[in-house]
Image (cartoon, rainbow, N blue to C red):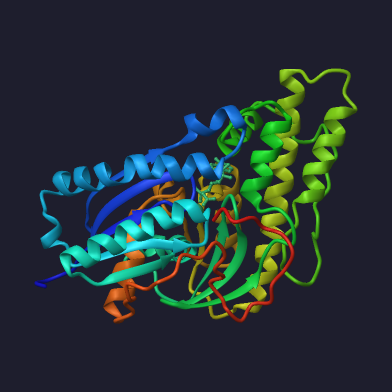
Length: 351
Ligand code: KG4
Ligand code: ZN
């Protein structure tokens, strides 16, 4: 290995198939992401069996293409990083076994990556200045957590959701407002023209001492408000979307403030995960961080949603510490980042 190592990253834990080549100096040499949205849209959500089959179809040609785009051969790659969980187990197995086969065939080290660690470290891929420890709000389709990121492989969970994840709530609300799939971007777009004050919606757990989250009651309140209408017009849907999004913003802010009080040593407030693509959430968090004199770091949108560059980068960070895995690494549908955190009810497998 000369200079910075070149890592091939593979991501297949949900409904994106992704491959990336990332160098240890943060150069993204090549990458590709194939979304399966069209395949899942008729079902209004991700169907695990369809997802796994689509990964089988797409992954290997995508690896060939990314290597060709990067102008490198497998022999020139220094390590293989593949998501080993948490996620939909069929898809995780497709990516992990493919990564193992490549590592075995080319005699390269394997890095079995926790998808959540990929999200957690992703801001460091684009921001070399971001130092540990930082407070991370990880908001995605399957997770809603506040984590103290003390270092690579050193995470403390300060809070999690007791029922739905934030992205899951966006997706469910989009469905019940007839806004389509995937829900987050659809709700955000509808909310732009909506009146957030028209419907009085609850802010679950607001002000409670533990910084945990809850969104199930908010989603049910949207459902009740919808059912109380004579018919759901486009204006009604926009107003409900705006009201829902405003409630989510309030909850995320209040909970983050609580977590900040528990982590005075944090050097920055960082947001990651698919929901971090939401403009209203980003601007509210920017305001909060600024008011506390902390830098606010959010990865670019393409790095917020599932991708393989974050997996390759987590691999680079782990490789630098010698944290490599054996070819017997297991695929895990559930895999908490903080093994000491007490399990709580809720949150699906989507990360
Ligand atoms: O991290 P991610 O790509 O996949 C995993 O969950 O692993 O996150 C996807 C989630 C979905 O629930 C999607 O609706 C949500 O992120 N999302 C958004 C936005 N874009 C994506 N939620 C709110 N506003 C958005 N603009
Ligand atoms: Zn994710």
